[in-house]
Length: 253
Image (cartoon, rainbow, N blue to C red; front, top):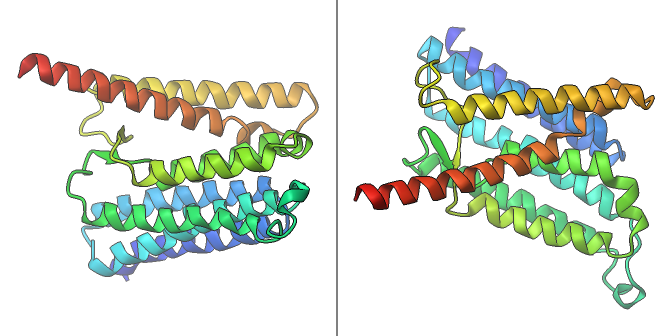
């Protein structure tokens, strides 16, 4: 039974992704994003439990990738699909307008490719190469939750979403190094960036909840809204860290 605990947790991640996808189809991006976050929580604990119980297995690794593609690939793609399907496209695109929303699932395919690369890439033990799929999912869910009304009110909103989807798909499989919230130790030295990012994230979420409650929005809305900004900050910090590391390596070389 002990050997199956990580796989059970992984299956909970998979089920969370399926629920998120269903909510996305029913135009409830807030609940879809909530279940993506629940899935991400299970995803965090399945790996931790496997390490603690020392029961890692090849089937667990494959199951984890499958669950991640559903929760962090198919679910956010469906959130985007459901947003695109209610938007107005130009008359010049009337012949293909009914099919354009399906372009959202390009992101699910790139998420699967990113996960496959991660399984084979031995460079990603303490960091990532390319945008992690959970970060991408959080970005898209939060973006649609916070800006869905605005996106529907601008004539070029559909184009912006498709272009951003293509950019994020490229980021998933790019060679850009990105830091991970993995700790070899709990001390400050060597973990400055991680602790600062966690602190800023906590402040952003707390501030968003406070603003939401002040303006008579739900606590859930306040909790879900800031993640797109947090992920953008993560991208910027990762790029800056990579540039600093490259410069330091050149100086030491």
